[in-house]
Length: 218
Ligand code: 0O2
Image (tube, rainbow, N blue to C red):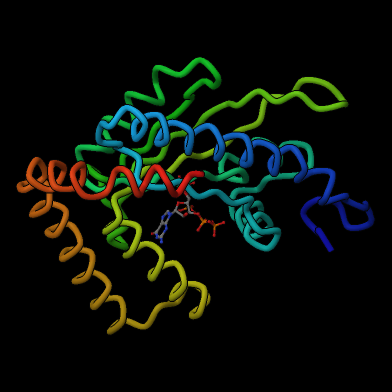
């Protein structure tokens, strides 16, 4: 039942979500292709790996209730289509951001910097909201999507915090919260340490990793 979207009105979720599935699929292929191009040229890729998901129905409904979306403006929700770009170093985030800004296949409409403005939870990531055009048999559509750019350390922390939030229904016990805040600080400190020896790591990886990383795409 979708009370918010009209008690007695049926809502075809599959029809509604199809364009988002298409958007996530296309963006994943394109952004994974960027990494491949770097590797082929034998240069360091600022993109480590790319994942994508279509927001789950229960999560869409929860956010819709919280933000008072209706069936008429549900497509304005910005993160139904979600892409995550993982990078090794904080510096790579700014390089990926430049890369996204230069692309001609979508338009950036908003940016949220949770790196320089870390959330109270300890969450860090850079969020970019885009408008992505798709063609379907019913015609042309513009789909909102959210691209999250984060380091491996930020991703490690966020993944664990997200599952704990799910487990406790958003009410993480105070002692666990304190541990998470400490862990967020440690993750930020690890990012900083890695940045300091970044050039050395990158050189080592180019010597050691590149041929294998490229082979993974075949
Ligand atoms: P899902 O479907 O489970 O991935 P908010 O009201 O905080 O949800 P806000 O401030 O508008 O949303 O942020 P934004 O840019 O819409 O981003 C929401 C998404 O960012 C979340 O999706 C998470 O993926 C991520 N995120 C934001 N804050 C946190 C946080 O404190 N911890 C973790 N682990 N992730 C966060 P959802 O809502 O979880 O949806």
